[in-house]
Length: 213
Length: 213
DNA sequence: TAGATTGTTAATCGATTAACAATC
DNA sequence: TAGATTGTTAATCGATTAACAATC
Image: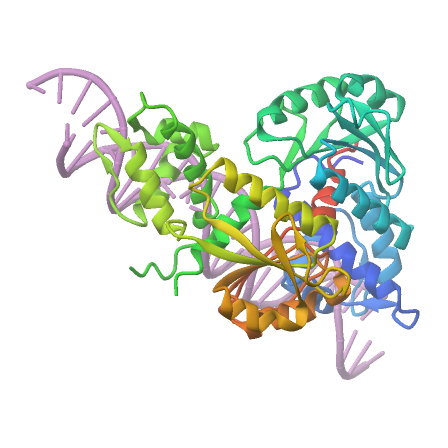
């Protein structure tokens, strides 16, 4: 399957639809959903819901709607969430540890959640070799080795800004293809590596704009 | 000053420009910057930089460029970052505590960073009344009272999904006009209240799409 | 003055919405 | 069959980029 040039705006809505479908699937009485209803729940117009889904196939039945569980499974497959993905978290500070714990809780509650923080990395010798909430902390020196060994395909960066680019370079070098960066700095990655920024202070600064009376 | 209908796409780039200008202002040799250079550093085209800034006034000089420190001050003012803004953080779990600590560190390092997490709120009696890294933890019952007392205008939600909407309602009731929500759930707020979502799992799920081969 | 770069208008591009024939 | 809702095409809307006169 190759859907080469589907826009990022479309991809960014798919997890939203998936979340709604997961919720609906929990109710054994619900079998079908219309683009109308799915749209309302995801906060998206019904025409856009249909258009987004149509990029990947014909999942609905005219006059009927979409089969909730079927569409959920299709979306999981499209998003590569139908099998486990191991994630490295670099920077075992309080934010990193919080995210790791959060991930474990999520996985405990929802066994269809396939993203798994499989290893922590840090440069602090006092942390290296310890286990935090059941996840091993390795030296950032071992990044490449462990990424290969544990089949890690994604990474989260929670190190200070100064070291974020170095860490990103090491992750790219190790073969990681998707990075979520929490450091408040613009980092560069080569073509083919996908980068998302989760910059808290940028979001807050943006919100501050709207405080004007 | 009233800039009523400036698009969110524009506003979301302003903090990016501000960050670049803050970095440049640290170098006493740099006085001026062109839209070209500012664009490169912020990852935005030069024409868009000029257009974005032009919404708010004429800040540059033809043939010369923009005065770094002047433009920085103007952007701070536009974003309401020229005076302190007190922020409430609701949910003193590990993520909330990490964010609070992170904010304190940021403020210690950069005294022009005016966003201040001034109070934590939690429902756990064991936490209420204690201080975490120097910030008081109050009962969520006291939300309205403390928001008024401490002049809190913004809030961060780091409670579990089940209680996120209730907390948002209480914040709105208390008069908070901007909310950053970390809970992985769609919450509703009335017209006039601004909401941003920082949903880690949604971002990771989106990134997973790009892992196909 | 000559060269450079802004502010702004016009052109382009892309994303969303509306409309509707197909069909369950 | 009649009613409903999809998949898709055309229309609209909005955001970005290109171009250039104004001017420092």
